[in-house]
Image (cartoon, rainbow, N blue to C red):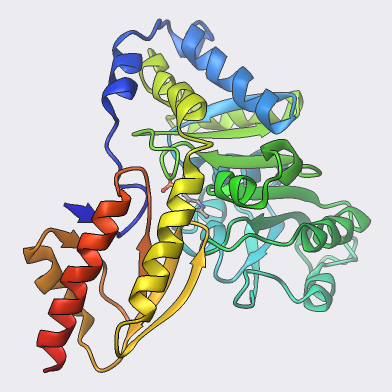
Length: 339
Ligand SMILES: *Cc1c(COP(=O)(O)O)cnc(C)c1O
């Protein structure tokens, strides 16, 4: 199978599985799992923050950042198309009484800075208004790396209004690897950062939320309340440590592969490609029913989602030869479907 649907589909490698098998564990609710503690310290250090908490998913991590820094009746400003607004089932509103203030993002995943500034509620004493409390941005967004200067401008606007700054850095690792910046540099200036271990890094489960001691302590309490306190979680954390040690630098291969795929697909008739953007690209197939395309490709072991713009994602379980094979198959199938 060559699975282009997401970088979440990777299976743990033999090396990762043996790290899992050998993990030293303890009861993490008591703070006694050495492997979890190690992962948390390692991630905090890598990202230049004081503390970290290991959580089940990116969704939980973003939610904890909001709950730990906002009160009922506060609001967080977030992209209309951002994961932390669109794809997290309304958790902050449902579970925290925290209202989102979504704002349109452009195709690069960026706010209009004037609109952002204008949306911040400046008169908390006015009892008609929610309290603007936190500003959340996403990097990478659809694989696109946000310019560092833009991040600094957004942070400045947030700081001018005493907002907490959160980065949904599910794929921040890709931004770091592709821009040549250190992970710590990419997340500099944010109060909290959520990073996924289960996407390009290839771990089966888990995200980490980092920030200062006090916020992370508060996040731990919320994690417990949400049922996210787990026991011998070192089994999972071991995979995360292995992933950081072995799978971070190699992400540049995924970026090279997505560039290779983009170039090959662009040369096919009726195919237009947006990208590569780090490890992903978005493809339009003129005059093709992509549901049928997906079915035909699946018969030959190639998995894609259907849609107007089909996202293809390169990851640890896709090698250069897989891409060449996939392009050959796609070319044949497209010829058949358009013929
Ligand atoms: C995947 C993703 C998340 C959520 O991660 P899950 O582990 O699937 O809950 C959050 N933000 C972004 C940008 C993501 O891509």
